[in-house]
Length: 320
Image (cartoon, rainbow, N blue to C red; front, side, top):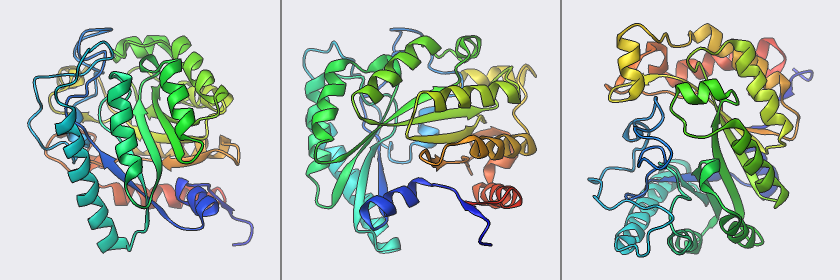
């Protein structure tokens, strides 16, 4: 057992840095959207995206009002701050009861959480950081939705708090990005990830394996390019098909076949073997035990996936 190499999970990273377990509190604020949903760069969103399917806190009926950086006033801000309060304290209570949790990071999860006027972002972020025992923020966004002004504000927060930006990369192949209706380019993603790192902020890159037309070599090449950008952490996701997405129609017409469990696990294991010791892993798979899932059925059981991934890593000398 002494020859086994321990994978640097984000949990281990936080325990090394803070000497205790840090728990993420996912937040989904109504009124946020994306530039490829509202028509700024595209319409309909990414082909795989049906946001409610992975946003358990987004329960309220969505308001007609939608944010974007050019909105002059945000009449919904007070309601958004109330949502933040309600979601944070409800989730915090569950984590305290179940795990005796003491310290937390507020994770702005759903949609694009920098796609709003800076004053709105400041109000939400500062409110989240004001809660007792919150050590920082993790902000899910896109590289075409940050500016130097936003990054500089986050740098100011990072002087006292743990600040992470989570960028949805998915793939560095422009033909894939076009196919999934991403509305962004690999060149732009690389520019802003480099810019974010130059300012000293923590970056987590999200990669999706099993995107339409991609081979394992393409997936691993995207990983190599992500590593080259010196990100601090990575999340791996399998592409699955849920109802009410642009991908649904292609799947039903037989024009898209989801990645097999064996290929996904093999690609994740090969990816972890490539990672430098300083890059942590925040996620190795995703499960959705939900009636909205169409395919692949192996995504219904995340626990079984985790067991198989751990077993596969163990054979390669890694402990996850």
